[in-house]
Image 1 (cartoon, rainbow, N blue to C red):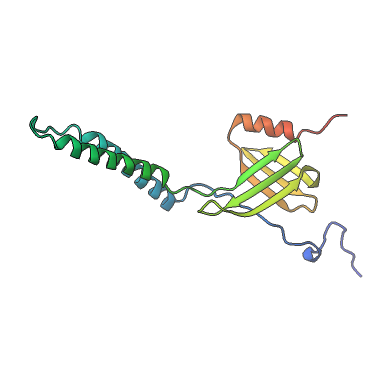
Image 2: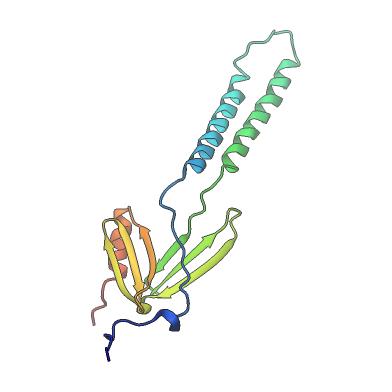
Length: 167
């Protein structure tokens, strides 16, 4: 008879882990959409200004009114192209050191919340901040989150939040 070590445990007793994944980077279709929308907003802004560059006859009293209508229309188009620009839907991750919890919210393209996952610091067994990535595992050894951290102030805040408390 062969005995297995205690460290090998079957997965059947644990519920599946909810996971929110961060995209690796902007995909090419999203990048193309953003470039097109920015181009259209710049063109519309230049058209709103350019309407006034076109000379008109000094006796024509209706032309300034027509220019004003076109200029306001193009300025409205600029505002539309800026506000309606497609946004990338990345999850929002909040680390609350006071309440000692990490919460992750995932949103869809319309901005409504799809799922929210909350983990207490006490339920995390391993938190590693290395090579610009924060990785955390729960007490069962499952990866809870893995996200890039580029900002040096965020790195310092994370080190302070996950520092062991001294009594």
